[in-house]
Length: 596
Figure (tube, rainbow, N blue to C red):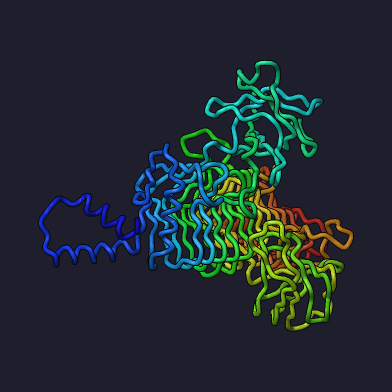
């Protein structure tokens, strides 16, 4: 059935019988054609949305039809329906490629996905909108419970699974495309639950008949060393469901949403309630990418502890203006945000203006192009080099994006002006595509954040650790950071710090090396409330204005930083106007601070 004939049949079936002249019938037919050419209804292709039927094939037929209509075009779902997806031809239920002015209109519908399926893969599209839908998995990739016994000698804990969940299959990791395999312990914290990784070796019956009592024993893998903080009857846990959690499907890490290499994308009023691995990947986009009321959190109305086994938003290598607004991020077992680009290693300095490089982490290739700003780090000198402009890029082999195991190809990059200091072993980044225009505004964030590229945080409530840094795999070290009008409290990620600026780049010996000069630049914190420590290292051009630190944990520690201006900050109710009210670890930093 074609899109037009389906629409015609649907509309005429709802129209009362009447006598129509040939001219009137022709006019109606033309109006239907004009209306339906831009709208594809999943219902017309057989999607029932009853929460029982397998709607996967019907929805994928509708997606294929969508690619055949002229823009602007819309894939529409019925209001408030529940679409169960048991089968799909592809890893992603909805795959959009190369479409213009395309909209996915969820109308408040919910999608229950089979664990081998993800929701959306959008690439090469322009002026795309996705809105009004929720995504969940059935069966879930986790079960929650409470620790009822701990045995550090046997390196195991006994867990009673909550009645809300089906009992998970026993056993350890399958070893099939699992990026990691861990559970999450949840301890009471001063404001919210505090998460801690518990790497798993195996799950078994705790004793004969324990499964009937909903109790299983979870044995720790060697990576888990701490048992002292586990309190039976108090500590809760999210256990991975064997064969589902941590498992990669398709190519790459298979997030629920993949939004890459598009121009101008907007995602509104979306919920992700569970994810087997990553929730959302945002990579190599241009134009503007907006995420408004895009919540990744445990399903409201339930007592779930987990929403996603890994990152909420994994953000890499975007030229685009990125905006998150009014989002609620909670229950990730990794970071709410990871904003960065991939680091590349210089494998040969051909000349002072030409180098051969290879991306260190081989997946999610971040290309360079003429006109980009190339940032460089002198590994032996432990300092940043000046940024230069790319003049020419010559790939030494083709990029194969369909092969998840193919490493990023080596590139020969020519740039101007010359960098006589650059040599093999140094790091470089594409600073132009390192998410240089990122804003996070009016968001509620309950999980740790890794910011390794420029970012502006405004009017947010963050109960978690925010880490501004760079390392050998990801960078390019944050610059132009602005944090304003926000509230920070201790939560997931660090028991003492709410914000840290740091460098984790290794020296020539492979060990993390102290920079010889500040490598993070242009940081402003203004009118924030911090209930925890602000730790600042290796920063130049730092402005701290009208911030309030709440005792007893609120403090500012600064080391190896330069050009620091502080004005009208408060420690509790007292004006912070003396160097003695700060923690300063070196004399040059002390001399670099101006308190006004």
